[in-house]
Length: 179
View 1 (cartoon, rainbow, N blue to C red):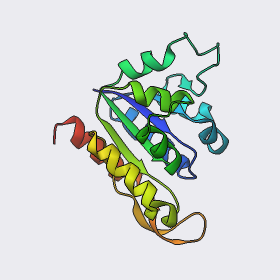
View 2: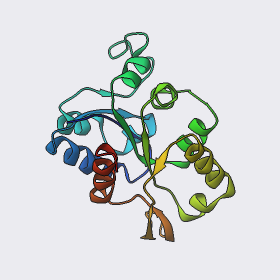
View 3: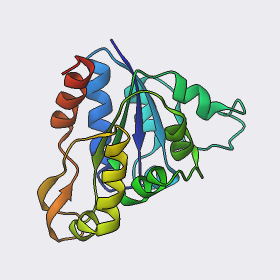
């Protein structure tokens, strides 16, 4: 099956990302997880390591996991990158070429398709800058799995919930099949 890099950011939806990693591995994919520092505050890297059966990368500067150019090695390995959940922060960073931690740095070096599953508050999702950043990323070939509508972790109701892991999994399988 495919080699997939799964980027996980600091949205409360990070707990759903563990389910997505598990589904991908059960389907036979080789999954490498890269987490932002904020994501590690919500779900521990050990969870993703156990589910993926691979080391989890969390720090651009950690000598224990860094071979000096780890972000380049990570970027060259996958056939597909999935960014789920994708916060407004990571979307803004990559849309503007900011590389200040392991995930954003890796994303700027990838040359394979990137599938993005946004997750944020409805007002953040609808903000003109977030919409502009998503449009900019779509313009360079990024593909999106639309967020759902409903009750959000903050108590608001609206669009911004990360798509369910099953829907993201289906989008990944379709992308890998060339659909």
